[in-house]
Structure formats: C-alpha cells, structure tokens
Amino acid sequence: MNRLDADSIDILLVEDNPGDVRLTREALKDSKIQNRLYVAEDGVEAIRFLRHDEEYSNAPRPDIILLDLNLPRMHGSEVLREIKSDDELKTIPVVVLTTSDDEHDVLSAYDLQANCYITKPVDMIRFVQIVKTIEDFWFTIVKLPPHHD
Image (cartoon, rainbow, N blue to C red; front, side):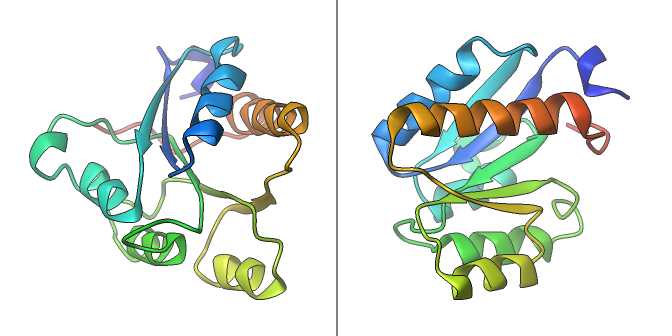
C-alpha cells in the first residue's frame, strides 16, 4: 500500500527533550500527509509502547520511529538493538535523530541496522527543516512496510 493512500502515518518519537518534541510537533503539523505523533520520553517507555505493555496495550504499530540516542533509563542504541532483534518490530524504519555527530555513534547505529542517521542541528529553524525533509522523504518517496496493528 502506498502511504499516500493511507489514513495517516503513525510516528513514534523517542525524545526526552521537551523543546525538540515541540519543534517536531510543529514541523509535522502542516504535513502533506496526515500523521499521529506519539512520544516516548525514554528508552524504556519506547520499548513498552512497541511491545504494547500495560497502558500501551492499544498503542498502534508505528510506521516510523524517530529515535534520539541520549536517553534516560535506556540508551537509544539499546532501544535500536531491541527493535532490530525483534522479529515483530525489525521492519519498522528507525531514523536516528540525535545531537551526536561522533563517528562511533554513527557506526554503531548503522551496525545496529538504523535506517538512517541524522545529526540534529542546534538552530531551531534548521531543525524544523530537517524534520520536514524526513517527512518528505519517508512519507512521500519511500515505500514503507505494510501497516500492521
């Protein structure tokens, strides 16, 4: 199914910085494609969301995950490892969106099968542009895996 024909795109943003959450919401607000943004504030919450634990029993399977690396309770690389080693979750595209431009972090993310790695700009306007570019690429150009709930 082409995602352009879908009712909406479900996005899981794994991000502990409220400012970055707000900017991401703002950037996706005027999206060409209807989307629902879900936020997990740390790695443990993200895994619980993805595995439908307890209060997340009705959570949708996201079409894409935007993952920060520097998270409390469970580092983003561990979240990525959990996702990509789980047969039910591994086909969900994961975009690492983080402040780190450290070569080790980049290599580690790709070793763990991240679909792409983007370093967050510190400039707010540039950050919004990056999120809109992610949206344009992943929601209009890329064919995403079939949506399963």
